[in-house]
Image 1 (cartoon, rainbow, N blue to C red):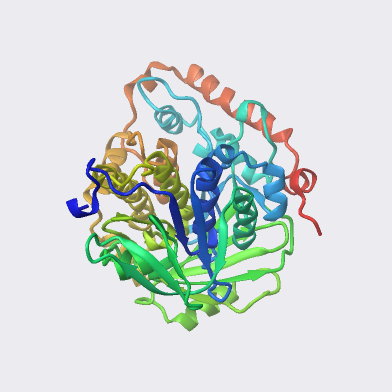
Image 2: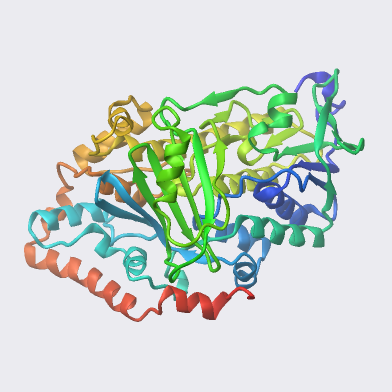
Length: 504
């Protein structure tokens, strides 16, 4: 920020008026968090138009959403009933490693680590000696998902997330936010006024002619990025050379069976398809690359692989994978799709919204905007999405599929050096690592790398200190305890109906 925009004390103008441009999941998550914590001190307005539809396909989540809800003191049963939610224990990746080969990336821990080496080394030794089953046999959440079972366990013994109705979630958060003073204003944004002196956004103009002024603006206008991109000119970094998909088609179908606690991700020759089971319907969609398939062909593939009756016509969404080079500039913070986009293969869209909102709350510019805060916010945001980016690229780079140009090109592409190092390290040594602030735990990397077809060449010598009998007893004890726990769980469908059934 230049000196002209700062006060005599070196700080910018105190922030008292917050304007959230756009609703949907991003806008209302921001409104809920800011109003719950600072609503008594701020004037918070959210501008959205009923005529502008939201993307509304971010209906699968990851366990970090529980932390967000705990901070906001949201009642889980109430939230799940109102959003017609079900539980989620992981993602089933079908046809990714190769056609007719499947694996599950679960939310749980696998086995028991030693301080010198992760459980994968003991499992690897057990596989060599014929003493171990599948890697997933030693993970409670994975085994429960295979049996379509779920329950809350003592001491948070089951890691889980949700499948939810995104539109209902936005409505739920709207009611929550309005209780803490958020004012919703109906209207389309037709103009953005900036200050010639500071470059800050002064106001947004609606189609009604109203001008909405603010001190801090949160851009939740989706891919358009009306404030961060069009008004402030922040460039977009394109990652399509690593992530080929640029289109999606979404539709909803009736439920034809019990809801399972898994998101299904089904690979096609030109992309992949999702199935997300809710209490009242199933969310479906196909993500594809227009470089490798015509839109009509992709939609036909989707329609030929659904269960239940369609409740709508497929809605096509175009996107560019990547990120804004700055997600906070001057007095505008981009949240959600306006800040960047990664395809929802690992259900990270809502998580990235959540992280942006929580980071803003931790660095909220009550007494004015410091450039040091802006720089640190942008540094953390870039680092976070780049870690997730690498994890997503892994699913495409490491595959045995050679049946289609899409997969052959993905296998042969150059990937970020940061990802190549992780792949080489695991393949050669069986070791993994994670940065303290990154999203995916070591077990997530292990599950996906094993699932996609990497088998380490060696294991840590600590595992060799166990003889066959001791190793068999160690592995068998873990598996036996998990088998007994899973056997005592109720079905996922029965648990949902008892715990959080949505009103009919």
